[in-house]
View 1 (tube, rainbow, N blue to C red):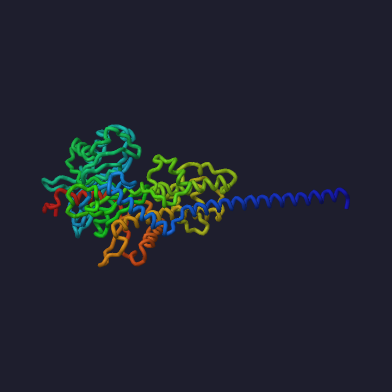
View 2 (cartoon, rainbow, N blue to C red):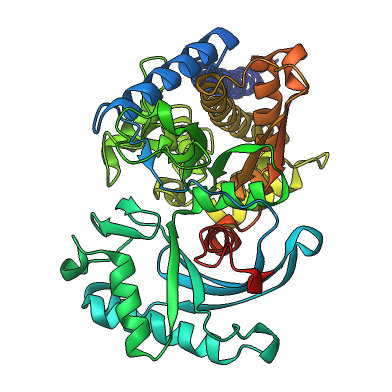
Length: 498
């Protein structure tokens, strides 16, 4: 072989070796990245762990905080607010009642016709409106006049069959989803505005008085019979159709729970005991916290960067506002440390709250063989393309970890309420406990809902689980308020209403 040929052969061999070395390095690099990604997922899973023993500790802590919150104002992170709802619907209510549901920048007005024990809800209709931004930082008169005008228009459209009998005033349930210190079933002082509102002259004022004055200015004769929040409305709606409803839980953007307590079990209750002997308590359980909660570094960072650091910890672990964001934060770390989506971190992945829980739910519940929905969501929301099936499966697993933790913690909270009320042990005679549930997270996130209900059964035990049932109580914030207006009507004993 000539020198030229030998040289060429040597160069060729070196080239092959060089290419092989590059391939090996690439494979090792890829293998190292994948190992790092897997390690991040495994660590997240371990930190989010909710074994049964831990859930029991959390439930016990919830029960302790409930006792403390009932004992004194500020005695617990749970506010345990007395709602003054001592007369829940029975299903026998009759007549036409209204509701005003002010939960944020939108509000609804409703009209509900009740037909008694046999008729149930005969008819219902509603209208919606948005509050102009200027009114969110104006005066209380301007805001309530706007709301009253919409309600006046709605009342003006009522058909003859809905007119009140002579001498009988229209009655309304008012769902007001802002912090209020109630002093009766139909009075409450605004503590502060939230959700973008800033109307200083209303703080410290009775919101029922403000609404009543506005209705009079608009020529509407209407009595506000009940001031409630959406969780208590859900409890009322559930009780209307199921006498065994004693607990209500909202799992949506946020979360809260309410339950029926024996009035004599409330140390800070100083008024005369209600005839029913019962009082509904608004727990505000989103603010619950315990050393037993499985909190990760992602949760700590989210809390620190939130508008209310140190507050609503339970809500930040369980509710729809935050689940998708937790998954985004884990994916971002994987992109930064394990180059999970390539050499560059996808810019969209850096945007807080870009991954909403409904999209997370869709990915988690993707049953297609190629995880097509996951692929579409990554492309459309995060602008991440060309992911392998292997990586899409990891995304699904992250969704499962976050949702499972949230659902099992919510279940532990429910178990804590059951323990406080003595409903965790089956009673003689087959007494059942029905839990009224509402909120988009519970209604639409099937995997979350199934996990929550199964976990409650796991905690209660096989012998008792049949005594606990869940009922979706839809639109408690609206219809529930109308039902509470009916159950607290001035005309309950008036035979003309039957």
